[in-house]
Image (cartoon, rainbow, N blue to C red; front, top):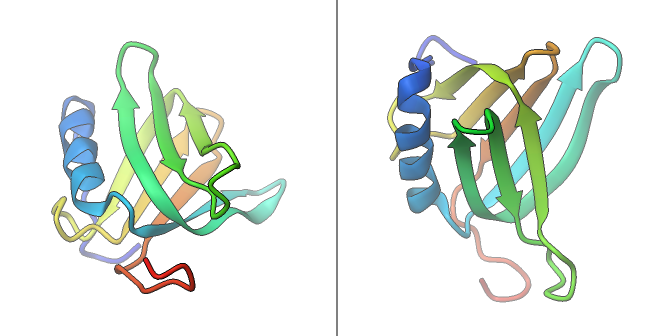
Length: 122
């Protein structure tokens, strides 16, 4: 993350993520999970975004992507009890990366890629 990173307060998470989700829906995202025990592991690579949200009732951050094959179910990555979310850059319309740190210290890095033409014509 760069110096143009923003760490909004928890009360702003839901609205900020809703705005990012509306702006980025359908665009490719990469989800990488990182910790000192496992290193970095790619969970999804440039899959179309369904949504990103924070559910304050259940205290979970969710990023949902569609699979390339329409017959496969969506992949939902959930971070329980997130305690820090960083956005780069700091405005919902421009966000390119979201770093979510769970209470367990594991980081989930969501990289939002620009709209790209895929082999399927999207």
